[in-house]
Length: 72
Image (cartoon, rainbow, N blue to C red; front, side, top):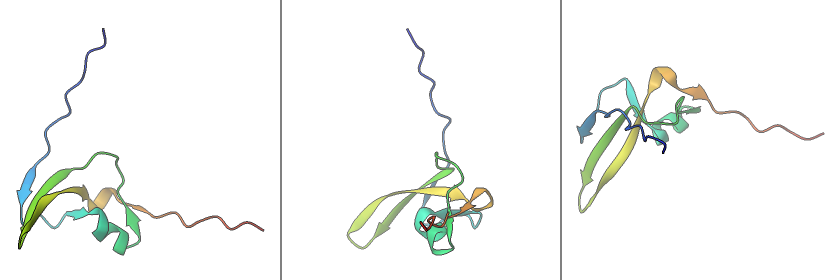
């Protein structure tokens, strides 16, 4: 039987988060993508009648978005 490894807990933030973290959308707007497959934090937000959670990633680990390869 294979043992399941419990993922390490991630910091949770409400409404605001530290400057060193960014959402996936914020990274995309800068031409970047997350450098890891797992988020470095979780944002819980509420905006008017909408609420939800969002993954946060370390800005320092972000990588450039690869441009598509053009066919000759």
